[in-house]
Length: 220
Image 1 (cartoon, helix red, strand yellow):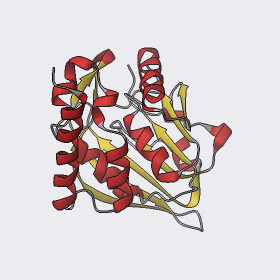
Image 2: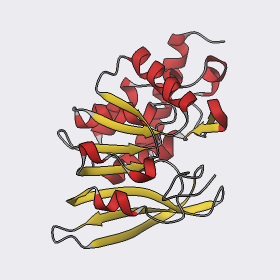
Image 3: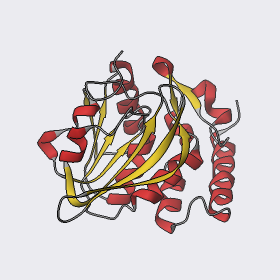
Image 4: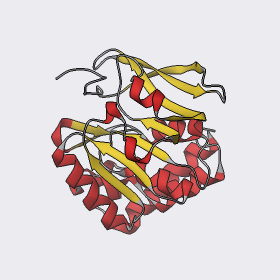
């Protein structure tokens, strides 16, 4: 296994490449990626591959997304300091750490798999992230106690946009979500709620995510 210094150098090269290619477009997202390298959020046996731009395994048969996909979703979300954000699908905790760095306030993230709840909490603590709250539960129901949200980011593929998430979105808010088949290609949508409460959906393009399991998603 290579040293942490080499892991960091590899990660910095990956971030700079994504920035040059225009995948990472904003300086804020670039800084967040540099602050929280992906190797901090995977198991040690996968550290040597953390800089590679592809998904990697995490516990419970799930994956941590490829860096380019995480960057695309964060850029589409247009996160700003002070926003109230809900993430559905904590996974490793990496995306929540990046969100927290961008909004500079508390972030709420829901994970249905107990093993991943603990995995994410350990990773976030190790990385020094103090403003992320990992909540066990069904993310398709949202998290009403802290609603409404300025942004909701869903990191799993749904058969349709869960109605509770639309209800918990602030007027003027934005929801980023993959919608489509189970363990197949989905379409990534940017869903906006107008100040008048109308829902507008814009398709970004094809993606592939693990299924969103829950009452308003896929059933186990």
